[in-house]
Amino acid sequence: NGVHPTETLDAVVVGAGFAGVYIHYKLQKAGFKSKIIEAGDALGGIWAWNRYPDARVDSQYPIYAYSIPEVYEDWYWNSDYPDHNDMRAYFEHVDKKLGIKKDTYFDTAVETATWDDEECMWTLKCNTGLVVKARHFAACIGFAAKRYFPVEWEGYENFEGFMCHSSFWPKDDVDVRGKKVAVIGTGATGVQIAQNWGRHVGENGSLKIFQRTPNYACPMNIKYLTKEQQDVDKERYPELFDQRWVNYNGFLYQFRDESMFDYTPEQRKELFDMLWNMGGFRYLMNNTKDLTRDFKANRIGYDYWRDRIHERVEDPETAEILAPKEPPHLFGGKRLSLEQDYYDNFNKPNVHIVDMKRSPIVKFEKNGIRQEDGTFHELDIVALATGFDSITGGMNAIEIRGKNGELLNGKWKDGVYTYLGMTSTGFPNFYFTYGPQGPTAFSNGPSCNELQGDWIVDVMQYMKDHGLKSIDPKKKEELRWKQTVTELSLVGVRGHTHSWYDGSNIPGKKVEPLNYAGGIPVYIKEISHETKNEYPGFDLR
Ligand code: NA7
Image 1 (cartoon, rainbow, N blue to C red):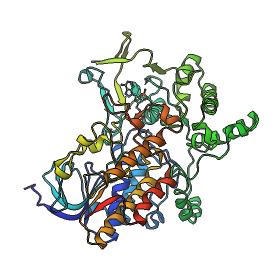
Image 2 (image 1 turned 180 degrees about the vertical axis):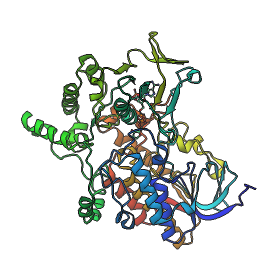
Image 3 (image 1 turned 180 degrees about the horizontal axis):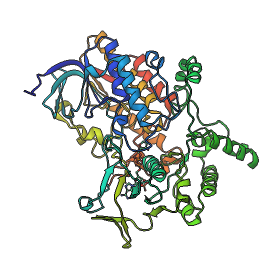
């Protein structure tokens, strides 16, 4: 009759993306009874939702994947930056190897989660009627679970063409050939959609890209991979996956120890050219360390980037909007994106940039978009690539009640408080991954998720071994962590730039550092201090 009986578990995991699948797999292996609850209809998290054209991983092969040998031993990628089709196929493979789907409730959204301090159990209630009780509750819902539609634009409902947010794309894709199409937003997502539509819109169609802030996109320089090459690489996988723990971002490379000023201008150009040609985030993250620490070095880095973009865009006015003489923000302060032919598309007569800084969008009308200065853009298809209420939005959307009925979204209303970016005082036996005050946006997703997943499962194992019923971080440790996160955020360019990294993309949201900027190796020291010393920062019961 559609009504589920209450299910009692050791642990309930919410979200079947990289983190949720990993934690569930580890719990199964360790003999815990756990299940996953997933709002979507497939494994993969963001990769199950992200179906927009050219949605592609930005972290280079092979580390945007699990380090689990039984998963990688017979898995082969098509390219070193897999696309969303590859990622969905990958999660099918993961399921074949690890058997995750059978333990997952799909199409099920958690509405409330309530802690019972006597029983030391969480009760989760879902939109399908499912009720789950569990000792431990791990929220693995990712940093982009709540999409954002700009609130100041009027008349979304009046538009009679096709409109879609990047995170909720039709499974059949959208045929843009010969149509008048627009992409709004030029973050990592907007750049990917725009370059794809630039390829496919055809001579009889047109593409307008609405930009408020230029994205400092760098070349992806994608390479297609052979099976033979991957077999050779696989021998080194254990060593490569271990390198994630010694590099700041959980990548296979990091900033150089030298300063940009240790180089002559000629040597510097040689270095920049090399990093540029290698592609990916290397120009930013494998550059000299002062690129993101020193304003003068940052400007040199910006100017090189700007020159490279101006080389590719023929119309000087368009080039100036895409890469202005004066940097609109510090290089690396906002999330860069990776592109293939994004900039080249602007050389086509039917691809145009629309500068929203000069004149913002005010409303949608029946046949298009109106800007403040009255300019009207007639359109058939609009992609909204306007981002997310990132990092906290997904968790805040669930009614999570801890001790004394305290609501998590109430506690976090005027600022986020966590310990180690994985727990929060007053919410015992509650853990989260890839969320606030963790390395989240400053790290490779799977690296961060495996690291945090291991730590969380270790906590559960320790409690089981010691007959403990509840673990809750001490208030003073939570305050210390907030201070640490704040102090670290002031070092470097990110502390001087506003973006979704600090919540400022959402009107009314508290603006504060949402990511831990100490880097993966130092984060490992912090979290393993707790594990090794039997959780001195927590109250155990
Ligand atoms: P982002 O990076 O938040 O980008 C959103 C884009 O939408 C960005 O260009 C914004 O301009 C633009 N935007 C948002 N609101 C407005 C309003 N009100 N007016 C004009 N323009 C607006 O989201 P993405 O989906 O691209 O990427 C999210 C992350 O997912 C990405 O970084 C990867 O880690 C994966 P702005 O820059 O704010 O001027």
